[in-house]
Length: 406
Image 1: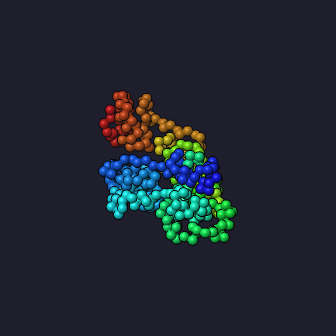
Image 2 (image 1 turned 60 degrees about the horizontal axis):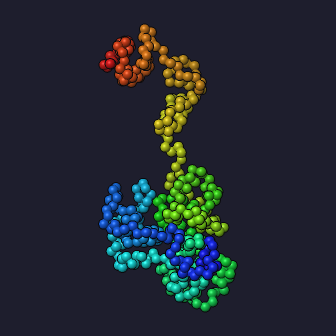
Image 3 (image 1 turned 180 degrees about the vertical axis):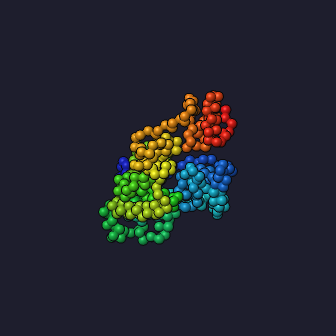
């Protein structure tokens, strides 16, 4: 079995070149050209920015190359309005296009290599390069799955060349005793170093302290997050802001299963580090504002004087009359005795000499003004002549004259 794989089926007799060749690999490493839309205008509502697809085409990069350039900080982006998708300003595109050596220089900065090609750059064997990568001397920038669902780690070609310039003594001869002992013990830091690198990319692109906390929580198992974050509403908010897994456009269950396993911290001290970082990050997020709760969009209606506080009511829902405080009166009650929480509201009594008219609500001396209550409802329902006379008689007894009715 080759050394440059982490999981999956063994590849007996397969060369490292074949492992990194094109094939059914991990979707994060693939990308298709979207066409030359350099002259295409920006979307409506964002006059000075374009979406990532147009920006990638304008910079002559494949989608995977563009995403890596954004994560590495070579292409600066801004948050989109409401959609969550990041956008690129026209000024940034112009800056990169005017840079010396465009587009070859930009492509070279995001070029990735596998084990075999990296060993060629270092002028060493693939086995030695794998030992150096396992012991943490080189950090993968991404990975993909080959046709046998084995993980193939990819490295930045520029970092491999820099390593060769700084560590020429590790490329020839015997490995130092301490390094050789770590290799014999089976150490493999590739997945852990990749997770740390990905977390740094996510934190760089996070919009706010809650998003940064969600990026840290994405490296922990759900049970560990529940132990670290006691508030269920905060856990829900972190899950909502959780960064998207590097699945790409694949629907393969095998790809998702292997990727999910690589995304989670598995070493005890690594888990402890991320749990501590999550606690510190949550303190900063809570100071910036609480996590959303179900009653955040509810209204609190003022209650009558002497009554219990009003219950929270969602907009559009039916209001519920709160239970009264013992000894208090309900609005419209005519007796001086306290009313229990289950007693119905007393109906207003008609004044002597005034007959009730179906469809028209009677007004009382303590009722609302002339433009509310019975007069407004009478206008809306087009009352009969008898109802109009009853209303006018009521106002005459008050010593005032109502506005025209009917």
